[in-house]
Structure formats: structure tokens, C-alpha cells
Image 1 (cartoon, rainbow, N blue to C red):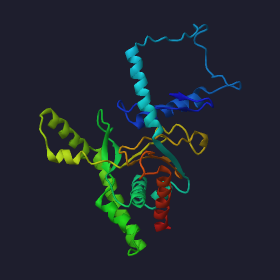
Image 2 (spheres, rainbow, N blue to C red):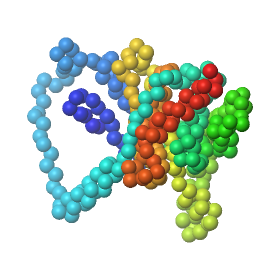
Image 3 (cartoon, rainbow, N blue to C red):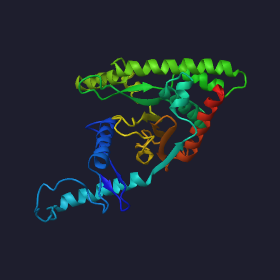
Image 4 (tube, helix red, strand yellow):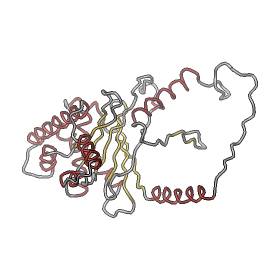
Length: 309
């Protein structure tokens, strides 16, 4: 937990134990009870009953750090600072329209955004690439995630139609719906254990255990995810009405790029008419630029909107 001087609080979470929705769920409960169950009095003190009349004074913990551990900490700090300074982060607030419009178009909001990301990436890089979208598998006990491969034959056909003058808007809309329908089916398959990437990873683990080299696994698992995406769920608990209390709207969180020459894009649907995008890349890569890609995402969203207007 990181508390700043101006009273703002955020979280930096280590990923191995759980995924973002778990932390988000917990955080929403904390915020709700902090403000609506307990709250503060006029002087700024927390309301509630004092459970202990006298508490011992806090004592500072003093750690015994060996010289070897100190060197390890210093070297780890150098690595962490190098990574931090290389992050190119841009947060784009899309307040022109949100999921209300995509539902009006009878389209899945997630598929709508994923198609916009495919169009944006093609415009930014001039090519298509392997795209990762995280899907939850929490229908299963101890389920974590599965991969939705958002860059598909269907999405490619639609993107190319948007970049060509040889298609009518009616034809583009038809291709767009086809791509969105396929994406939704992919997402459902991933959620219900019918994805492919976790199975591929299991085959990889077994092959290492059996000391078997397979050209197929070597090729398929070495392909870089140059566009890594994930939707961060918002207001999972429905405890706070964001229309009545807009001060509790949060832009959510994000993550870094998976590939050195790629983008990491986390997006949040907040209410019906607001979208947040966390776009990250590496400053050391001359090909990528997070601010540029954020603007291209905006252009792509507007281009889709114009199809239906």
C-alpha cells in the first residue's frame, strides 16, 4: 500500500498469488466501509467506538542486515530503478462514449474495445501481431486465467476493410460484427476451460519433466506477445453508486509491456459512458510510443462510432 502526502492511496501488488479482480474486490470493500460504514467526524477523526483506552507507543523495528543481504538489496534496487525509468506510461481518459454506445450497437463492450485495439495497433505499427487478452477462469476452483487471442482472421479482415476505400460502411459493419461474435465465442471458450494456451503450457511443463524437445512447442511458445491487454473490472461489489458519488470513480490499474518492443494496455469500463486506458511501453524502444498509441486508440474508437452513426 502506497500512501502519498496528499492523502491519495494506491496499491502495488505482486502478481503470483492472485489476479487484479481479487485485489479490486477487496479494495472496493475497503473504500465502501471506510467512507459509508465508519466515516469521519468534522475534525477528520474516524468515527467508531474506542476498543482500547490505552495503547502502547509504537516502536520502530530494527532489522539485522548482513553485508551479503545489503549487497543483494542494493543490486536489486539498481535493477528495479532501471526498469522503472524505462516505463513509458500514458493514461487516456475516453469520455466521448462508453459501453452504453457499444450495447446500443448490440455489440459486446469488451469485443468493441478489442477491435479498436486491433485497428489502433495496425495503424501504429503497420502490421498485425500476436495479441494477449486475459480471461478469468474463476468458474473453476483455484482457476486463474486463460488467454483470448484477440488477433484473429476475422479481426484482420475487418481492420483491412477499415483501411481500404473499396468497402462500404455496410460491409465494414458486417465484418465488424463477425469479428466481435468470434471474439465473444473465444472469450466464452476461455472462461469455460476450452482455451488453448494453458494446455500448451502444461504440455511444455511435461516435456521439460520428460526431457523431450518438441519443435512445435519451441516455436509456438517463443512467439512474442507484442500487444498484451486486459480489462480491469470496476465496481464488482455494486456497493457504491458511481452516478451519485462520482468522486469514487477510479481509473484502475495497469501493467507493463510483455515484449521489449510491445505495448501493455489495461482498460476499465467505469459506469456507462467512461473508459480509461493505461498504455505502457518501453522508452528504450524506438518503435513504440505510449502517448501516440493512446491517441491512435482514440481515433480507432471514433472510427467505429462513425460506422454506426
